[in-house]
Length: 566
Image 1 (cartoon, rainbow, N blue to C red):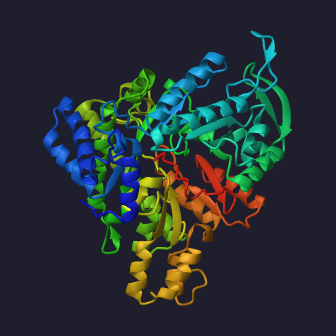
Image 2 (cartoon, helix red, strand yellow):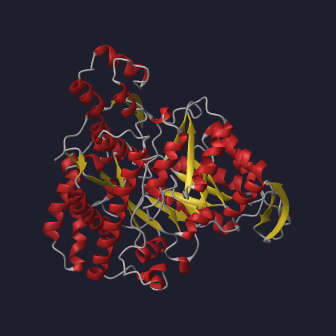
């Protein structure tokens, strides 16, 4: 079994290892991995597979820390009525029954450890008439506040923070209020919010023209606004607080493999998983530093593990106990999984490639293309063995003559917040946030120091206690002349990397990702509103499916509040 860091053990004890009714831990990390492997391998029986062989292979795969499924699977696989999926989207229709039925369903999902996304775009705007009562509507924002309060109450059993995504269309009459909503950091603490931006809106911004706001109740325009004015409001709020992000909704729907089932309106809380109403997805991430051998990626070993990961995630769909019948029907109908990577920054360091270099972007494209193509091939083999996903008929794949697949989508880049602590690697595809920093997980404060930096500093002869004191104080080696220039560049941290390099990296992964990519575009505190606007334009031009920016110092405690959509 892989060796755990002290921080990893702290996280496992706090969140993942099973406890009895008194809160006493009743399993070891090894027993946790055996529990998960046993639960997922048991599915093989229904497909005439080798249960014993898969159980041992799954256990070795997990316990080596080469791969981890999303947090709910770690917590609940093998537990009675265990819910294993991280990502859900629920519909919100324009009537009181739907709004509160969805709230009830969201509470059940949150209680089970999942994160939920909602589009509030179908709700009539504030002050719009309600003919059944003779009153006026309170609007989407007021109902979001109710959802936020309910999330606070549920608390997900204390194991995971409540996580929601709230989305509003750019042409909704209440869009300005929505955009300004989280400039007050106290508002909607359990929500990430994003604006669903259309191609037509971005064209109106480019042309500096007006665009209409549409009442979703009537489908008619109620007024027009200057597109650039709204875009500037969006950039201002993102600059001030990090919210809202943007999702390029037309781009997302271009990649919808099952348009016969509906259109995408929302994503999971971190934005990397667009889903139809009542869909779910189970994610998992490969620990990429394990595949660096003698200064290169071992694609043969990576390919073998991709096959194992896809099989495990597909099994997890059948092993799952869903909180709602509608979700079980949709997820088993499309069988969406999200295989991605973590430890990407560490991988580049081991390869000696600076994160903000053309070589790093090229490497990202090659690696993710290999993962995507390999995953698709495995899914085609599973379809021959087990049958394609039930909603394959009518899908884009059937219409285009693509061989049948077991899964409608297969690849996703998740943030891997706490998973990366367990695996002792950098999170997702993010650059290093800092070479050393303090992180709070629940009630535990942890000090993290990048182990690759220490190892290379010792090997190259520039390690010293004085240097480590500076690293602990500042989190970076910028300006440290005792560190050779090449290593100062190799160990650049997130806020030292230009926003354009962040976006280039996200675009490289998005090009070969079925779903979407969770990535924060870190900006230094001195960054301007104009920089945020340029980032949004660049993201659109690079055909990203969404973008989130974070300017240093604008969201208290942001680093410590890891989102567990992974």
